[in-house]
Amino acid sequence: ISSASVRNATRPDMNTSQDEEDSGSSDVSSSTENTYSDTLNSMTSLLEQFLLHKYKMKQPIIKENMLKIIHPRYHNRFAEILKRASEHIEAVFAVDLKEVDSTIHSYDLISKLNLPNNGRVWDGRGLPKTGLLMTVLAVIFVKGNCASEEDIWKFLNMMQVYAGRKHFIYGEPRKLITKDFVTMKYLEYRQVANSDPPRYVFLWGPRAHAETSKMKVLEFLAKVNDTVPQRESSSHSSSQAWHHQACSTATSSSFSHPTEDQDF
Image (cartoon, rainbow, N blue to C red; front, top):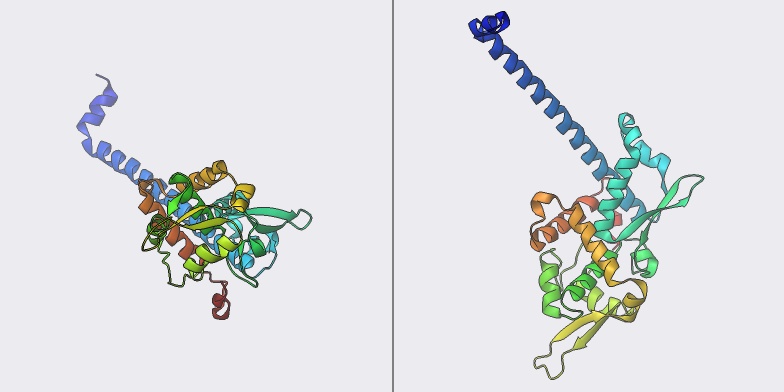
């Protein structure tokens, strides 16, 4: 037995003190990491709101302006924060952040489908409707390329999107899905033969076949699932609940003004 072992054995208070010191250091380190992570998440959320506000108002997205809302201490993490924000927006709204002018580092959010007004569908300002269309296309695909109207609304209701109820992004979703997307030939809305009372099914329209593919729809769904926190990703319903929460968080922008919220 070494003399050091004897000294430690006869002075247990020193061992206890050392253990407490190590534990305290670990707690401080963990707390620091959590604070840093929370700060990054907060800045990512703020940047999401900024990007969506610029899209809604049809204003250019300039890197210099984005840096103004990020604390200077984190400017060296700008690329990471921008990547996280754009991926989150992509998973909810089905739009891609693309650089449109490399000389001034100007960006724009581009709809994955060629919907009118860059995904806004209607004239004027507003937020993209592409995410809703991609979601409906995904349900149709999962249901064997033909989904009943009941299946579509059952899925959308879990995202808190209801027929006949005005939605803060999609306006009146029943009109958007059964009229607008059908008129644009992204969806087909057919009555089931000999059904009484009438029942309807949805299929992909010719423009959906021309502009996207089943693989791209699956990739979109995969990105949604990757963005959902792992502890919540065990069911479709949790993903849909997350989708609604993400929409609400991303659009509750501190950059908006009350008069602008009337535009869809």
